[in-house]
Amino acid sequence: MIRSELVEKLVDENPHLYQRDVEKIVNTIFDEIIEAMASGDRVELRGFGAFSVKKRDARTGRNPRTGEAVPVEEKHVPFFKTGKLLRERLNGK
Image (cartoon, rainbow, N blue to C red; front, side, top):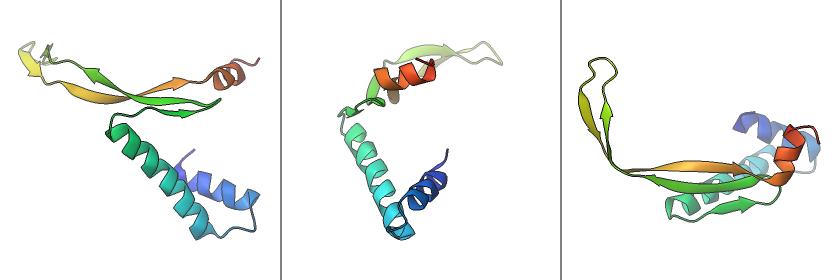
C-alpha cells in the first residue's frame, strides 16, 4: 500500500472528512515519525511495531566488480521491529 492508497482508504471509511484533511493528517503523522527518528528517538505504535535508528560503524568494504578494498563511512539506518500483534496476524494465529 502506498501513501495515496492509505489516504483513499481513510477517506472511504470516514466520509465526514475531506480528502485534503486526511492527507494533512497522514503527512503529519509520517513527518513526526521521521522527525523523531532524525533526532535519535524511537517511535512505537502498539500492536504494529517500533521504528528506531541503528548505527553502522565504519568498515572496509569490497568493490564487487574489481575486488578492491574501499572504505565505507559510518552511517545511521532506519530499523523496524514488528509488534507482537502484527507478527501473530502475519503467521495466522
